[in-house]
Amino acid sequence: MSGEDWLDAVRWNDQGLVAAIAQEQGSGVVLMMAWMNREALRLTRESGHAVYWSRSRGRLWHKGEESGHQQRLHAIRLDCDGDVVLLEVEQLGGIACHTGRHSCFYRELDASGVWREVEPVLRDPQAIYEDSPKS
Image (tube, rainbow, N blue to C red; front, side, top):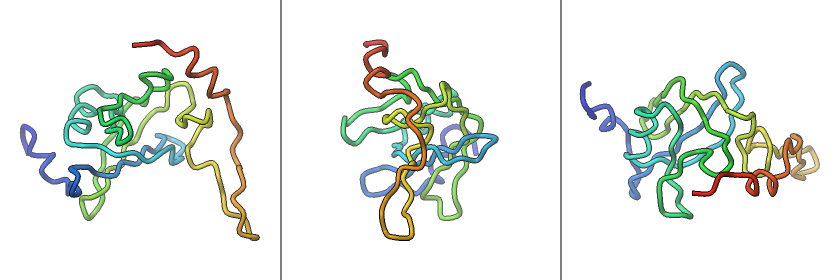
């Protein structure tokens, strides 16, 4: 495929979005799930850093634009149905979650049916966003 034909292989949902999973290269840890539109996926490939579509903000979101915790791209994979993208990334700063944790998947369901936090906060989120560069 040449040009932007590779984007046509993606099965975009009714809102023009595809689910994107960020996985840490090397460890295989699933860091987060976000949404991408066509422009976000194209920019991710071009820039070498993860760019997502923020549904709450209604705009492109360059991962780490506020926190500084960017995701450097190593590979883009597409699942068998073409409706989920997997980004293999290096998580700069070691924090992917806005809660200050390494991964957004920090809660685990225990045997009694209670969600338990199983990953520590690495940095106070208030400090992350207070210290962030303002645009």
